[in-house]
Image (tube, rainbow over all chains, first blue to last red; front, top):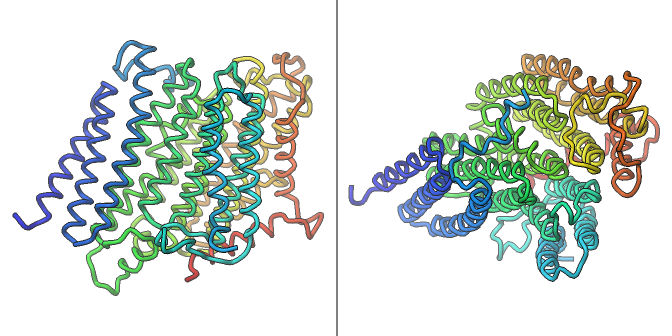
Length: 105
Length: 497
């Protein structure tokens, strides 16, 4: 398995699944943010491994661009978490229910 | 005029966004003068864009710099015009809404321009990574625009909801790109399609999975059935001009990219999607209609009915491989029709509610025609157009889509769409009936028609009527036929070499 891409792909898929589970099952908004970053890095790993496997540089460049975009996303995520925390003094996503659909139905 | 002339619209909007960001730092300019500068940049971009409108071309500007990642063709010029008009319209209808006492500052207009820049880049991108970056520029600026009034918890929560789900769908887009890259070793539109041809004899199951993940992102962004839950909450929680901006322009940009991707590359993969998409369409129509019937708040009703309109658009999207040119031109025409009607309706409601902070429900409009007859007339025109009554632009749009679906053999879809239209008359006409058939008005402190926004909204109302009856009166003034012809031309420009 040393020269194969399967191990890398398996690890990337594992990270992606862990991240996805984190987004849908965790309550803490900070953990949700970290799960999304984990998913982005799993995709990065996939691109880098594929580009090495195929002897193409494009995958590595794509990974660099994704890191840049993830940084911009982190800025907005963290500032929003600060705004929400100042208001509610909690990071539990269950109490953000001002916009629930029950109100309208 | 070299390659630069094709990039001028993008440059004007991008440079304008940076200039506005720097200007708003100094705090010496008032918010209305910043809005005027933003408007100036957008109008410049629009003029430089219209220069190529309706001319059959396909150019990769500065190919040694961008390596063909950015394209300029008749198709992108057409969609850029819609997006620029959308951004201009957002500033104009929000002219009285964006005030300093509502905590709007100059940075808001900079973000508006950044988001327009991202959408225009999305329309012009001919590669999956540049499409992802463009999508993220557009959505990241939108998240901040939604939550700009940080003192209002509804805005911040709407922004947070959209941010989590939007970045999740962005990750799915990237995952899909990775799978396509694994299967075809390229991310350029056009090259992907060549690699997927059956003649190459390759196993394309990875590419099918990847394309389906990108389809999921697309369905999420246009709020189709399994991914529609964010729409109502986010539209309800965001400031009204921003809801109008999201409903009209973002959907247009995402549709533009997906149409280009499917038309250029995914001809073979689309066959696998047919059953899936048919289910999605019927459920989108049914669930959207159900949600719209249940709402009492006007803003939430417009948000849920936008889900139904997504369903109509997807019908033409399904039939694109059978009746290609007329299907894509009917999508483009319907996008314009929905854009005008929704922009007008959202704009008028934001003007009515801009005097105080009330949330408008159906009951508030009882007897409204006795206080403000012209406003009720305009609101009725927009409701008629959204419902698709003859004489408005919405009717022509629906007519092209339904007749195209029947022509392509999707009778079931056409029937369910017509049923959804029948039911939609209930929730649109309820408003008209309440406005005209009650003697005593409830809303009394509505501002009179004064200033820029009402003039502009009246202009949109005339355009809605003109799009419905246009060419029967004056043959040579641009109207339906002209728009449809250019839409067909832009579909053809996708396949130029």
